[in-house]
Length: 250
Image 1 (cartoon, rainbow, N blue to C red):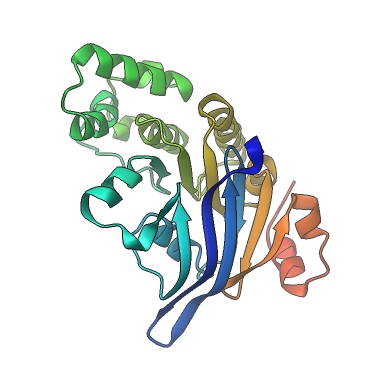
Image 2 (cartoon, rainbow, N blue to C red; image 1 turned 135 degrees about the vertical axis):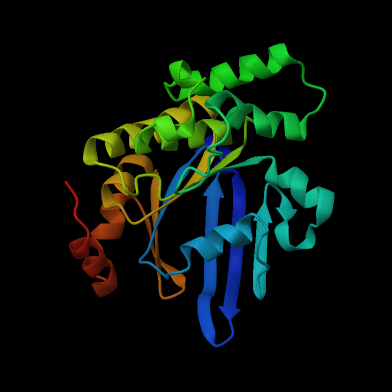
């Protein structure tokens, strides 16, 4: 990876909710320009980890450095400024159904840079839609789109502010195999075109294998195995083996 430079560095991260210990000493690094697929069963703490990375939850213990800043020390404008450097692709797309695609994409731009002229906004929207192959859908409503198209538009909206880090939450969830393959290819195209560093939260092994430069397996509150797909699933760890056997992979 590019100069092996970390954009996210997590050491000794703990997070509990009452008596429920969710993260139990997580260590994790995301390097500049790489994709890491984070695998884990439901309830393993994947979503909690993401919420801590973007400052929605505070850690109980541990250090979380994002783009050179300790996330739990930021508040207000500092935290807002950091979040603008992070793109989030939500599982359900999270589009505004009352707005057409153009306004769904232009909304983050106008909210965060009120000095932008219409020509600049039009160009940014066109570029983002072209990047996900849906330029012709600009004037349609989200309700007119398929599930896969909504996912693509959600990724386009995350890209509109040219983030340094992309976070994908279950990008292939609910999609048929052909559309899932297209979304996996799009994630790789985004990495190459925008030089993003990405965390891909997924339980889809095909997605993890096709998009992750590294795999990180979150089990029992810690990353139990990290490495290439072959390294992780070549492990004799019984929990890793059972996860592989439980999930279909082609």
